[in-house]
Length: 103
Image (cartoon, rainbow, N blue to C red; front, side, top):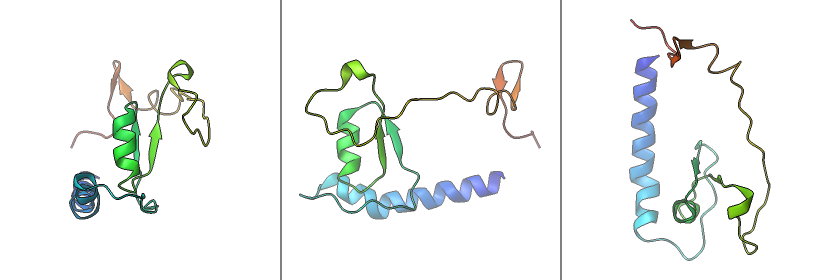
């Protein structure tokens, strides 16, 4: 599992260097199509959201309703869920998350 984790990190870094970084340095006038192979990014920053949008990265802007301006284009409003009993509850030891056994 750890080897797979490292290989996926390397693959993500190579994609970032080849595709995302050049678009972040010189943003295009129109955003490219979103790369459906990427997981994307969750952010609370509108600046990060805009930069990654113009780099073709799938992006989710997480904000409270009170901070959403009337001029913002919201495609889908989604409520957050916290499946503690599924995720954290299965992999915690003394309140510390440990999803993988130590080798």
